Image 1 (cartoon, rainbow, N blue to C red):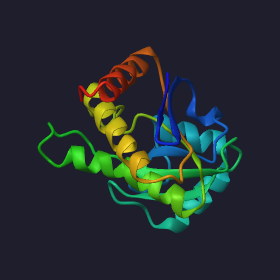
Image 2: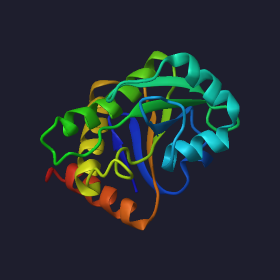
Image 3: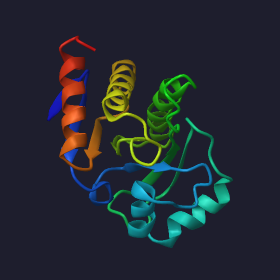
Image 4: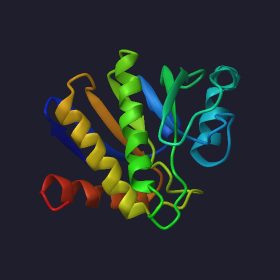
Length: 180
């Protein structure tokens, strides 16, 4: 599924984020930036040791912030590492922190002259953020960014499995129809 927002493309695909040929893929990292499970582990394994070496020099990352490294052996030239919130029932600022992950990742891309970015579904794995709610936050935040900035030409959400794809597809349909 693809929509145009201003002059940018926003698309949803089901697949493997480590296979994306874009300027940067976004890593759903932990605060240490030293690798972990899920998307984080897959990116570090596929990208090789160069990513970890740069991460060691970054001194970690706060929840809601983002930092950039090489893409190592990945098709993407860079990895933007962002730390999503752990779900605590929605009363601990999770929505704002998740929105910040997407916004800061796009700002880091802009600061580094990048024009295409691929995101996973941040915080919906081990951090237990409800998928439907996370999709709404992610897509709304990206849409608002693309409406206000012309520097990013393509934002791709690379979703793992049909359940994630359907959640994002529904959230995008609701957002573009003005229901969200």
